Amino acid sequence: MPRVVHFELGAKQPEKAVEFYCRVFGWEVQKWDGAEPYWLITTGLNSEPGINGGIMEAGPNRSGTINTINVPSVDDYIEKIINYGGKVIAPKMAIDQVGYLAYCEDTEGNLFGIMEMDQDAQ
Image (cartoon, rainbow, N blue to C red; front, top):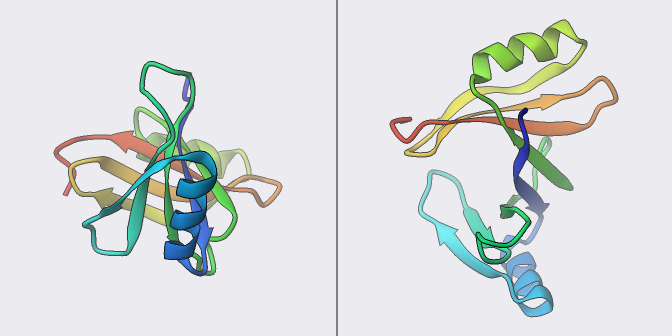
């Protein structure tokens, strides 16, 4: 069964948000060297319950909190999402050495991501 594996926080001032979450919760945050500004959040030990996440610059489809669900195939789940009344907001894209990601919307307008893990993604 697919599970939520990652969260993203959209921020107008990402550096300020990084400082906030580090100081309030003691989370470890590291800037990721990707095409767009992105900060990886470690919320605790992998041996403890919970998930890690990221902070990104807020934009039209990047505000609030977005949960990402691990799926075996982004293509198959895009088809399911559309068939059951959802929408694709950002099509399948490769995240270098991580996998494939698409952003979708459910029937109620809630934004979420689906991720197919693949270390060979480019």
